[in-house]
Image (tube, rainbow, N blue to C red; front, side):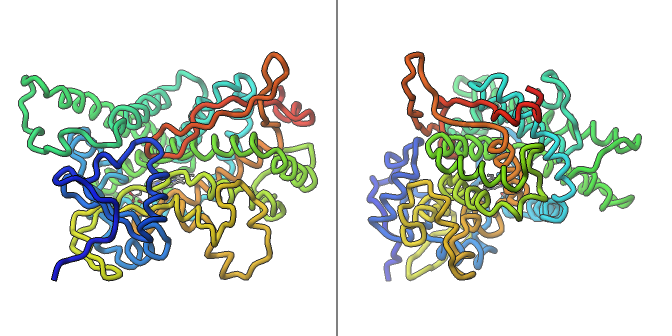
Length: 482
Ligand code: HEM
């Protein structure tokens, strides 16, 4: 009996659907395929299957319930093997190293442990707001700096005090290499398609990628080593602060092995790389939503002013008393869908699902974009409407439509940073609303400028630089000392 693949657009012989895969806003093509072919779509590129799971039920059935065979990552020769990316957990296959590091992260990033980091999160807020006001057009740089300083603090207990901070400079340079050089073309290099090229001698024309890989690998190693060594020194002389690394080193105690140390060092390093672009994406999207929906901003500000007052910025104790802000946060996660088709999971053995055959080695994607645009669950899904989460619905519906179920991925590869991301996003949103008016810019002639919305990144749904007006709210000037 012929095995039947899930439906999908027809490709060319041998090369398959390579021309159907644009690097720009691929999620829009995926949504069209979902409405034409249904919940599971299959295409192939050079014989490797790409499977898109368009509804949450299919994603849970496969990635969660059959997690033992759906949790590998694609083998990336350039990014993983040659550049040393395999030490970064997001690239690691489903092996013992992955399982060990994942356990560490889960232990140190529970909601309870993250409570300990609240003072660190709160400490970074005012400096961020001040930087934003000092040069609003560089808002992406300020968010990157905020995410970088926060992460160095939470992970290594490293406090950034100047723009010339060595750890920050190394980390920023490395994050740039990862995002723009190594992953610039969607992670795929010629050597990934023709793996024998990895054996090309260094002197042969065309081996330029190997020279680059050596350089980038050295940079990635420095990035993992410098902040960790600094942390260790502080640990030895008793000046280390409470942070991710200190929590784990103390838990390991005197019996810490070389392997334990390797795992702590590289899981810490992974967190830095994983948090940067996601934070930039969610915060810039929030700003865009505020510019485009002033009624939402005004309503959220009124709630904050009523509950928190005007003499201080909100803190985590205020969270239960700010229900509308909670709806805004949920809607920002849903509307943004920061990583619209998550990261690929590699299927480790042939599988059958809903009578379809899914071959071993396929790259399986949770199509988060279509899940967040499900019209039954979210009527008028393209619109930004926090009020949709205010409606009184029973607990089961409430749980089912919580976008946190989708936007952090599925199964054993689900984002381990979700509680940290969720809480730091809440705090930043609350503080920005309390202290700033973010609205449409006005040109020299007094004409209101509608922001031009473009998406250029292939992995993150990150709005490209757009125009807006950011200014302090009058009462917040003295809180920020501006
Ligand atoms: C708005 C913020 C964030 C969003 C939307 C987000 C979303 C995601 C998604 C969709 C994945 C892929 C899951 C999958 O393969 O099924 C992922 C992976 C990951 N995320 Fe996040 N993330 C965010 C912030 C963070 C932060 C702050 C950290 C670190 C502290 C983090 C650490 C990671 C790691 C380490 C992985 C790889 C997990 C693995 O391969 O097993 N993320 N994230």
